[in-house]
Length: 474
Image (tube, rainbow, N blue to C red; front, side, top):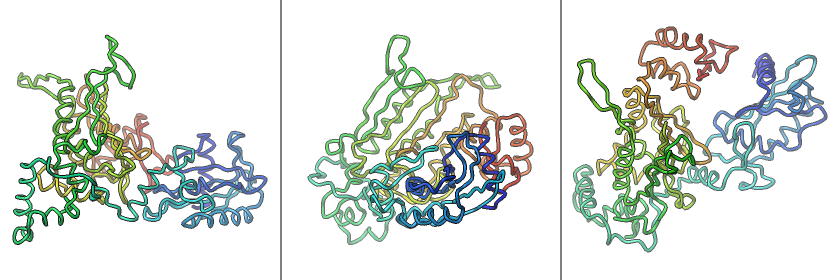
């Protein structure tokens, strides 16, 4: 960070009078803070890292107080960085503001293969933190496991399920699968028995069904895992607990069980059944029905939840949830993003697959394409329907898709769609890709008027032409 950028950061903090996801303020007028471990851990455990600013007094309206000794402060902060595992390497910047010395320490985000970063003094479980807003929260046991599972390449979908058996399997589905193997995997078509195919493809291990095999081919996997199911509710209001005109808490409430293909079909039918239908008159006078949610997009979202959820022992007691509110639908599954991918990159790059064997089986059964087309399809279907784009988020080890229905509203214009798209900060490249139009047209004819009208704002207003500039809904 350049000294001028640090001065601008100080002004920005004082204007907003708060810390943020990647900004932490520490008073250091009388000495170096003795406990930086939680912030060093939380910043290191997020992709964008963070910046600790020393010399502002949060309790005194973020007034500039300066640091006691810039050189000694850097030395002592570095000592604390060395007590982290793996060691944190801070980048320091010093500047003068109002005659006082301010010091910043930029903490880089650690590669996912080295997370969680924790304080060695108390160990991985107690010393790992995650940033939530402006606070540092202890990382849950499951969040710690998620990093370890990626680093060690733990494959939960092929863990053997003791005492399970295939006697109660779906014979037709198994037959279709074996036929698909022989058709599309020519090297397995000859001189390989059915039992050997199932072993080679991860459906069984030493003759015992794996979790993937059980979840797809068993007639009722919930006899082993009662909570590996879907709970679906349709609610009368916009929040859980709001009752309808007759005092009803739910319009519909169902526990969906069975194999993954069966749960997929039943969940889509639940959404279809509880969706409202709008009648539209075309320009030529013909009537047509418009679904509340694009069913093709709904199917992709539910399928993603079933395929990419976490199937570890830490989450096997947590079902997938479908919650249909008056104004939106939420689909929530255990397991955050897997591997080196961010929310912004979803649907644009090919991510690593958490449950590769399970996805491969479903691909052969023609239930999924396994070509990373799910999220682009969801976005395209909502855009074509004139609805706000779904919002994807990860919090506390859960992945959530929020689909707004736009009920009783006219289809969104491209400008309104851009505003909804910018519910999270978006780059220029993302906006151009979203509109499908030229850079000049997108930025000058669509985005700039939205900024001028106050519907969009810049994340770096002091540097409007910065290559790091992003745009967010005001």
